[in-house]
Image 1 (cartoon, rainbow, N blue to C red):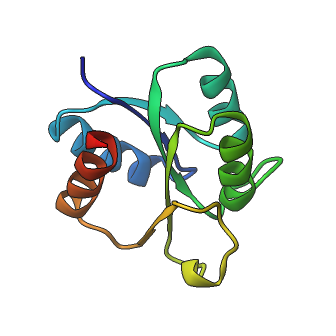
Image 2 (tube, rainbow, N blue to C red; image 1 turned 45 degrees about the horizontal axis):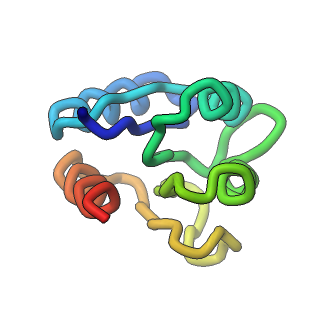
Length: 119
């Protein structure tokens, strides 16, 4: 069974390209356009292993708040945070969150996902 990754990204083209790269690396992918959609996915799917989330998104919460909600409600789910506009190192994120600045390469994302899901 291939590990399931939830991508949370409001920019459709970035989300689609990232989803394709993650699928090509051997993972199953779910997509969400904002944190609200991501929470619905997490509530309905118990097999999500990793959430790959952008930090700046429209909706009821940004990526940092989503990361904290995930850690509180679904502690085993691994979190990867990405942004091209927010200095990731300045954010207060849950322990163990992997930071990925944009732009990132498909290879870098695939390698990180392999490492996160191997544990």
